[in-house]
Length: 409
Image (tube, rainbow, N blue to C red; front, side):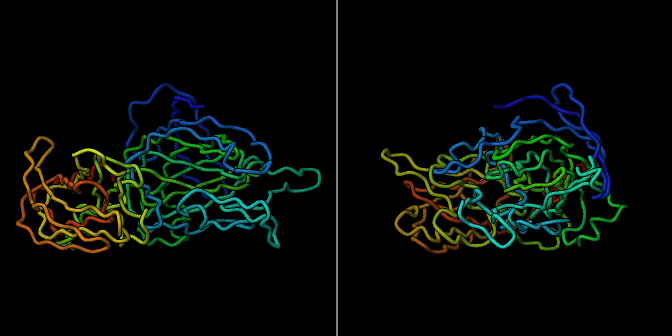
């Protein structure tokens, strides 16, 4: 069940103890205002109300979800990028850190603790009114959590997942964002002077469901404030978008990984995503298990598999690392790497076909050629776990990145 209704919103900009402004329905949005305090969002799902009580068997059998248009976008709230939940006003039943755990939420119907049912998510206690005469919470009452993104970025979509919270999910949620120091403390973010931009106004959500929103705000953000009204539980938060690195930081580094996700590299396309996504190849650190890399299905033809990347901006590559960690009987046999400068540039070989070993790091020095795109081809199939392209931005690339960043800051 999906909708295409787009809502125009106004930023609340309020402290955690105040209620955000509501949204009004509008027409389809072509974009969003870039200024602070204005934006648009689109409901991608329209799940509301309780899910049925758990009746045994597969707990995901009645889970409500739809196909979402976020394939290929980075999860800016991925803990592997450095994301974290830095504060919450209440986490009585389940810890705030669960919001960013990788993978779907786990449900064990027999697991209870001294506080009650143990849930894999962030769950707050039930709110109450001020007195016996006013037993219900005030309409402005809500719980909140502050999330640091793993890297600054432009947010394209949000998924607020209430998996397994069937009758104890929030009635509504809202989300705001700000740009601050990546190491900001909770008290820094809660300062009334901090300017917050509303991404999703107070919006009803459903229990045991993948509640999704498209965001149309062309701004660079570092932190989110997630509110649940008035209380309840959220299993997972996913923040899909495009990395917007700090040009000054990259300039000071000089040599860095031009294709790393945390530096602004992206996967544009790939021949195969059967076992695991190609985006894994540009994650930080080494792969820790087989499905933490990229693996294709077995080919039964004479073709080969490939990934095409876009670098953070125009740069020159001087050293290449191809890692096949944990790919032991299914590593690619050989690989080549080509580059091009611009969308219509000619592909130029940078690394000739080289033999790859299973579960190994392969390092190559190459002649630097200005490039914006890279294509790795593996023969005939299999996978790699990581690709590192060490080099530096050209003068043109550094200027382009600085101008892009300024436009969204």
